[in-house]
Each structure stands twice: as C-alpha cells, then as structure tokens.
Amino acid sequence: MYATAIFLFISGTEIVFILFIVLLVFGADKVPEIARGLGKGMRQLKDATNDIKSEITKSAEKQGIDVDITKDVRQEIDKVKEDVEEVTGPIKRRF
Image 1 (cartoon, rainbow, N blue to C red):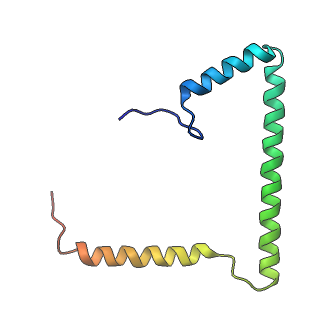
Image 2: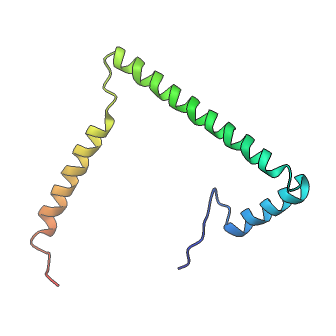
C-alpha cells in the first residue's frame, strides 16, 4: 500500500500538472494574486457557512429544539461499546 495525497479524486501528480499549466497560462507574477483571491474567497465562504450555522442554531434554540445531537450519538456509541465488551469479554486472550 502506498500513501498519496488524493483531494477530490485528484492525485498529487495531477495537482502538480494543473499548477504547472496555471503557471504557464497566467505567469509567475499573477499566481500569487490568484492564490490570494482564492484564499479570500474561501475565507468568505467559510465565514458565511459559520454564520448560517449559528443562525440555524439560534433559531432552533428559540423554538426549543434540541440542537445537541452529539449527545444522542455518544449515548449510542457507549451502548455499542458496552455490547461489544459483553460479547468479547470472555473471548479476549492475553498475548
């Protein structure tokens, strides 16, 4: 098994090739400006997403809706762990 970086089904070699093409098309002077623009855009998208999440959470809390689903998930995980421990307890061996 080998370790490669795969981002959105694109391998590392393909990413390098795309960056090379971008460098050829836009030139070395424009690449930093493009990267800054992309970074700002991604930051604005992240901020907008966080704002939407907080608004949804606030609205749900005002309506009395429980927004802490992690509590339910943790309880289910604990139940499964207990069940597994009950089944594997007598089977476990010391190595």
